[in-house]
Image (spheres, rainbow, N blue to C red):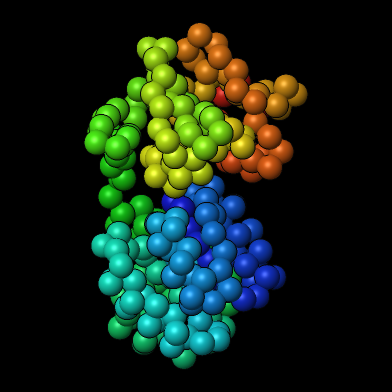
Length: 243
């Protein structure tokens, strides 16, 4: 199981170091980085990450207050992991229901133990199966499993379905980027694709091929990181002939 995460830390080097350690585990996908509690709260509400890593070396009180304040806005609360150079804030972290507390410098063994605990603690995510497309007083409900990809159409979005039909929504593609289940990946300024239907990724042609009608969708350099993450996930779940 993979997890999305947000880092709240004002130190760029520390942030990069944490990402490096998490990348070794192959279980994490960074959705946002914030420098303070205000930015952190906004990122959590916007991206709803599974885990929030908080550097408690500075302004620890504001981060504990942020975790309390979050209850006012959402019931979809993330798991918090505190990070610090000392144990000074460990007791306060426990009182605020932090899942774990890591001491710097990072210890790979501690990171892996936390991942194993997460796997046992967090239930397998149940993805939303239906999305409602609203237009004035018309409500259209479609099964997300039947969607091949989303395509931008000026300020509207087209939902391309497995059966060849097209459904329209009068909202931008960006609006749906954070609302779709996690198997939907943004690969281009104009496309969000259902990764369950990708049969091929060609870096040479900068395109993804779909299982249905062998349709090809381009991916752009700005979303190359998403493609790399998708490739790793698909490869991980496949029987590979690569040496």
